[in-house]
Image (cartoon, rainbow over the protein chains, first blue to last red):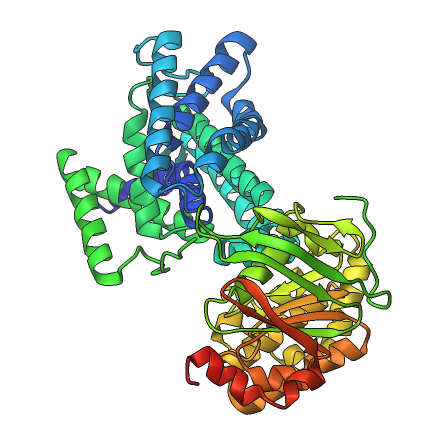
Length: 291
Length: 251
């Protein structure tokens, strides 16, 4: 029994790292830009198909696809910010949500047209390889996906925390006018933040595809998972998103070991409900700032 | 980055507002044709009752609000359409009303971000920050504290220190003493006078009429979005009471 729980914990942590990287962009765009990006998961889906295309057509390993996805989706995210978000930023929030919802539908429909609704899996040489760690059996893909996710999440954290650009972005989140009066091009910084978020979504999609089957239509479930992580962790803080991802991965894995699968969602959402009632906003208790 | 060199504080620039018409909603103009001159190296004060358009004129000067008509000139250069984040490059700094520190960053991080426009020149940035700490030793002592945990007066000091890292030649200030204890307010006005003595051009918008006129070289008053009176300090020193009573509607 103990071994079973330990196994579930390790699996939960590895999957939790992937949940974190998949969600961090949603947290950044909500917490720093005040933009509720409901199209976030559509970019996760695009990331999954990017990994598939790299593997099938170029025979590139998903690890390489993960690394390539970051700059590629950064550029895509920056372009979306420039062309869409900037125009609706000062409009009422509902307008922005509607437009981003529209973007999600367009991307999903495009995905269905391009790739049909068939379910896909990424199969590499090590997909079903495991190694033993004491009494535990651990899958190589889970380890690879988890480590890649951790590395990218850590890199985003370090960028925001330790570089002057990162601190300027945090400053902008706290007072956009004051940031501008100190000479910061807030439109450009916002574009970088959104680009990073979509970059992490695309790379997260690669990590998801390494572990789970995927199709163009199931992306919306990742949106609900990402929301769960973001609401649990609070907005705009990378370290809290990472923690929340791990918590959710653990709960899912432990609950799934001990209970029938249908209870997993119930437990997660009851937990979320309880935390919101007690703390007001997520684990961090960070107050939502008006932007 | 634009290639424009920063204007050194010594060669102070003059700022001129020419017949500016501006408002926040179309059809509702707050400024209906205001003309002001902030002369080089002088401290110019703008006074007026609530709703006269005092803060609005500063938002136009800082670039947050684009006027519907009229021009803003920095010396001879038309900067009406220069966005807010480009104005500090030209030597124009803005200290808005109310709190503007970044509350979740430390004082040191706040001050460092004051040198954002020098971020590519680390030596210069470090030197500018050090100069500011020498000038404001109390701010240096607060370096490790989150700016949001400071008192109102301390936050004001941090805001001024942060602004001075860029060594601006023109300073726009909106109600610097609002919400501060009188003794702290005195210190702020002394500091403004000191900044002027260094040759900087200062445009001060204030409700604290007496304190502002005390340090002013030249005074403008606005009423309902229009110029009302203007003149040297001496013209206003005598009958401030009557002026204020007039604004309050007490004749």
